Image 1 (cartoon, rainbow over the protein chains, first blue to last red):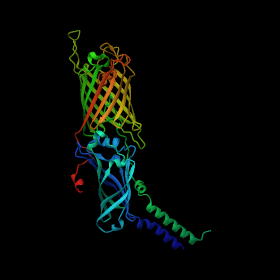
Image 2: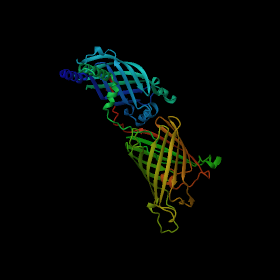
Image 3: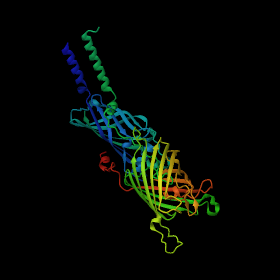
Image 4: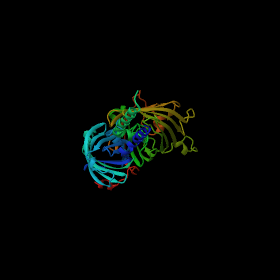
Length: 184
Length: 315
């Protein structure tokens, strides 16, 4: 009986180690670009503090971005981005929660590049939309690299552009994601 | 009572259940668990480094140059004769530069008394949204020199000392952004005049300023600024009595510009004039219309932003 209890408790301790194969990072990168042909200057920002976690077993994937951590070439643009467009005091975080659609096709224990589609809910500026984004997963040892490029319609996330600069800011911003997650 | 077998089974089921819930548990929660605490500083308490006449707590960003043109017209009450004061404009040109996030230097020239000035601004405390510091505190110092020709003195052997032309201002600016609409600021101030009209007056004027802004839209706001003198209120300037300066403003921002329109009883544009030597008054309807235009230029790109074309090319 004692043995059984011991095995059970041992098993219980081991279970999360076996099943919850999790990968994470806090230094992922997201770049957004809303430059148009009529923009007088580049409208892009870079965030190097993107947090992400992946559960390899279930294919669940989350991203979290602090809006104020976006860096810009011009300080004033950063202020406008935070104050007028993203309202980052009201909506400090943007995040994504979803699943790798074909996670069974990805062998996390075998090095290689896998094409995937990730579907889930993207929340920006307090507005949530269902998105499906193609990307790649590169497995190398205990590290996996996630890369994707997609577009977000500003209107879908209730981000308004004043009519005065309407044609100077892209209606769809392109988002480039690049994150290297390490096994926990 | 449970048999021990049942108990083990139950605990097994329970642990298995708890782990399944754990595995499906919000990955967000797990991310948050060990997240490094980041200071959430409030930003854009005011639109510009100047509230109306005086300074705001805002410093320029690192490597940012601000070119500012300020105009104060003659008295509105002058009517058509002087085109409501437009014919008697006073101009100030200034350049300010942000050495880093908390240190700003500036130079300026004002046509009023032909005054040149140099200034320094240091941000000591920053307001935080997630607990801790409730205010932003900035120190502002300004020294100015009047470059008008020396007045003719009654005694020929007397000379007009260079030191007579110098003025100094020190301010502690304390502000809080209460929400995205309302920001308020307190400005305890000391102005030192190397020369005053008579020995009856002190060379120092101590004043308490209050100011604030209320945003009407994301890009437009109304502002107000009042300097209440605690000492030296009887100061005369070339025989004229002086008043506390009160200004009402409206500001609009478009891209890299900030336009500030104001009505004030002060026509002077340097600290020593509008704080301690304002010779016009609201009750007497001696008001001046004016505007500031600020244009910022990025001279040095911020550190966090490194342009790397390959990042985008990869796709």
